[in-house]
Amino acid sequence: MAVIEVEDVRRSFTVRTRDGRWRREKREVRAVDGLTFAVEEGECVGYIGPNGAGKSTTVKMLTGILVPSGGRLRVAGVDPAARRAELARRIGVVFGQRTTLWWDLPLRDSYELARRIYRIPDARYRANLDRCVELLGLGELLDTPVRQLSLGQRMRGDLAAALLHDPSVLYLDEPTIGLDTVSKAKVRGFLRETNRERRTTVLLTTHDLTDIEQLCGRVMVIDHGRLVLDGPLERLHEIGGSERTLVVDLAEPHPPIDLPGVRVVRTEGPRQWLAFPARQSAAPIVAAVAERHPLVDLSVREPAIEDVIARIYAGSAAVPAP
Amino acid sequence: MAEHPGTVARAGWAVRSWWLITGMWVRSTMAYRASFAISLAANTLITFLDFAVLLLMFSHTRQLAGWTLAETGFLYGTSSVALGAANVLVGSVGGLGERVRSGSLDTMLIRPAPALAQLAAERFSLRRLGRLVQAFAVLGWSLTALDVHWSWDRVLMVPVLLLCGTVIFCALFVGCSCVQFWWGDAAELQNAVTYGGATVLQYPPTVFARELVAGTVFGVPLAFVNWLPALHVLGRSDPLGLPVAFRFASPLAAALCVLAAGLAWRAGLRAYRSTGS
Image 1 (spheres, chains in turn blue, purple):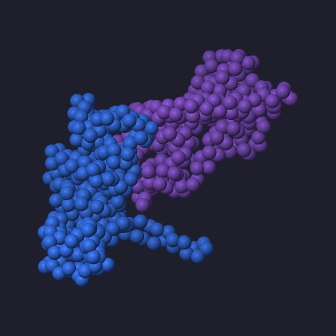
Image 2 (cartoon, one colour; image 1 turned 60 degrees about the vertical axis):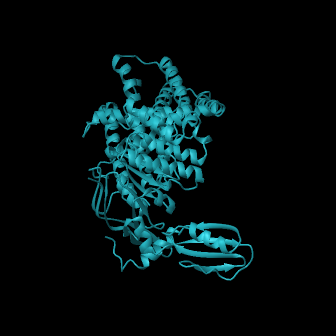
Image 3 (tube, each protein chain N blue to C red; image 1 turned 60 degrees about the horizontal axis):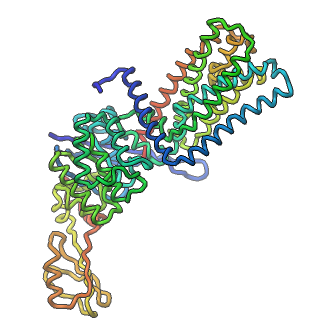
């Protein structure tokens, strides 16, 4: 059953721009322009696109914060804008850069408030809290005021707060932004677990491709208010023709390394940039380079989402979204 | 909650949400006890100084525009109680503009508690009770000092007056704040009407020009907070010569104010939900 149904949804804003001293010109901006997709129960979907593409407008319409200008929307069988308060009990929202926790109070107090506001039955509340505490490692933090938590700890706290009432849909906006590697891994592990065990439908917006690689079976790419791609992650790389980059520091300057399937895009003294298809593992290439040349240092750069999207968008006329 | 909860159930839920969130803010401020103690002391001192101005005035004259100190104290007390109670209950809605501008109203809209209740409880501080304590003290004193015959209808009028006055000020807080849905920096309008209005009501209506008094009857209905019902309690004649019915019309005025504020809130929320960024 589709938990999220979006049919030809449009949303435009009237923007007033100043034109001369007094005159103001009204302009209509289409933030979302004919969006159609459906998300099945238990799916985890990555929703990506450059800034201003219409991601947050979509999420705001799906939560009922914004009323669409046209089209049809259903979340958990409900029209979000018309029944916002009712829907609020069935969804969880995490804004990566905006905490909903109570700054000066112990973490536990925020959860107690959620228990009352969402009217979570006691037994369910305790079970859910225990689960979150265990999986997110919140045990020692429960009695710590939120202001004393690190960014990573706070994000884990926010995630737990969004899930105590067993939402059927979870919206995540940049849940790993600014986190260190360990915290990122914890957050991703928890989300994967929640998605699998609880069948919680997850819609994730992010700029971090690793989030998507590790969590999402499906990616939707939006640009200029339209879907330019909707499919499995591999398709993103296929269509985007995206490449990862291996940056190697050799012991001394060397002419461009010649390896099959690898393209040297840049050299600078002893440093070389080797591009290879994103689907391919970096390990054999590293091994091959190390075999022939003494290596001082190396790093692998993931393709930037903006680049992938730019390529998709450039070719989107040829590859219409399904 | 049922599919379509009744108005009573909705109001009850709004009050309960307000109460829960207020409790969170009270405990939050208790995280900074010293700061709380200082601001409570400062607040109480300032409100008492406020009444001292009135006392000072009466040290030079026995009457102010025909009203005695006790009568003026009654106006001062009732106006301050009504404003103080409204400020405790919904005073925080003035922060709406800031929330609209920063987009943080969104986080209130995704919770199942009524957004207005959440906004009204925002940043609640117990020090707001300081004003209320002072207001009740002045009112209590004036009731003992007044030279009126306390018939049952006059006695009954006092709590009705306080209740209606509080409701009217609550509605003015909310209604005037709604302007900030469209003009985010217009918080001063609400301040002028509520705090400014309460200051005007602390003095006898005969102090002011007839046009201003008429404006508080037929324009912004401040006169129904205390001026008009006080005429009955104190047994005074109406400076505008209005029918006696106006003295008993405060409940009706309060109901109309609530209706208007409710409509303004809904319209504002609808406008917000169809703009945003």
